[in-house]
Image (tube, rainbow over all chains, first blue to last red; front, side):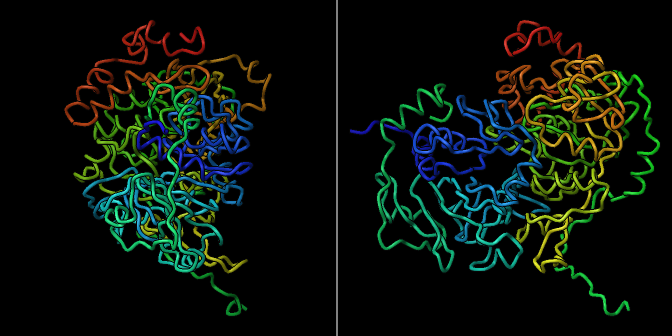
Length: 254
Length: 330
């Protein structure tokens, strides 16, 4: 018998399970922070969280509220600055990177800059921040998204952060480091990966209570479907206990 | 002989013109003239801004989110009436005040928002209305490496970021074929600030500065600024600095003004000194949603207060105590 859980708790658990022990992860604000904490408490005790503004190898006892707050270097191994962190990623040391955005296309390209034209936008969004750098230089990136047709669209208004750009070979052609790129998209409906050959987004597994058709209906481009779509396990009692008692006792992300 | 030499092909150019020219020789001349004497540079926020900032300048603030943000300097800048600034835009609360007062015309923008609290309504209003006439896009690494190029005294720095995206297309970066490997590489132009604002944990009266914990882009921005205004939680004796010279991230000769500003990052936080004033910040988040709300906030918390001391009195010792991690800051 599984407990009740919120959509954010499900996202956190799914993202957390993707992370591997003894690897490095570039952590942004919000859900990635909780996911990294949970991974440290479970399958990845030696996961090294790396925060953009200089925190490396923090023990995430209390939930950081921002990528530069004190908790991002709580009992950390090193406290440096943004150049060091960005250069570390550019040298190939950072395995996982987390991304988000207002829009994503089938190649995993993300928009967090504008809705409408850049010069005269309908909505001005925050901009790239570190997103473009994470998407350019981390080996494998994981996008965390709310899944609907407004966000998963054929043509994004602005390409802020590179996914596979226009398809196979496009990243390398543009000068981005070879072998890097999108790895997973974790949403409130499912987990998706990318086709090895065409680099298009592909449905891998659905969340509890979600059908393949639900995912298709909420995606604004033609989604590839894996031969065998599996079911994602709901958050376990242990995951929920750690999340609620240790990581987010104030329930900021419940 | 020359015809045998190959040209390095520029394969792409960002569409935006530079909003701050790369005058490396002018920067050298400026730095030559800066005093190297150990001179007492302490002054108030108002004096520093009067002396070292003029309308139309290209300015930048160093911070990460609401952490170690030069807020007392920001409020004094708003009150100064100086305006029409160009800006290196990586910011949260401080830029909202400048947008609220409509003081910004052009931005090299990396990230402007409210982090977990979402989009900045003040940024939206100023950009969508056209009050801000030019926005040039960069990534966080992109703009920090631009500071790094300036700090190195070189015109640009090559990087493997921004490539293939609209972020680069709407920037002033260029893409070349690297003459060594033949691979494409982005060139990021040096960014020299007319005025940089940095808040630190401690400084001596000459401007030797130390920062606790992570240091963001303080090292690079300090060295990329023609005029550098420092605010510090604590002013310490130079002997304290000399005990741990390895901790000095900004040496005195870079600094033009030293302002003593306890709780200078309020309502943001300061590593190991105080936490963010969350109730106040949440109140601001609600207010900034409308121009009227922003105006009310600015009147109460910026314009109606003559200086930082008056602000601290308004917040009150009890409230400051609630966020403090260290005693006796004031």
